[in-house]
Image (cartoon, rainbow, N blue to C red; front, side, top):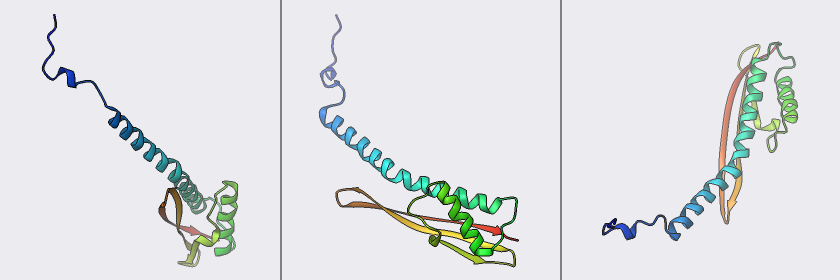
Length: 129
C-alpha cells in the first residue's frame, strides 16, 4: 500500500479564503477593464482621426477652421463621445503648417467613492493649401 507522507493531509488545494480572494481580484480587474476600456478606445479613435487628417493626400483648405471642421466630421462619423472640437488646440507653425494638439482628461466612477482620472494628449502637424 501507498504510505502518505506526514504533510500529505495538508495538500488539498485552495481553501475558501483563497477562492474568495481570487474571485475578488478577478472582479476588480474586470471592473477596471470595463470602465477604462471605452476611454482608451475613444482616445485611439481620436488619434487615428488626427493621423488620417495629417496624412491625407489632398491638402486641406480653410486653415485652422477647415482642420477643426474635418476633425469634427470624422468624430461624428466615428461616434466619439464626450470630446468636442473645443478640446483641440490648433496653432499655426509656418505658412501652410498647423500643429493640432488634443489634451483632455476624463473621469469615470469605479465603485463606492473611488473614481479614476485618465489624461490623454496627442499632437500632429497638418499641412494646408
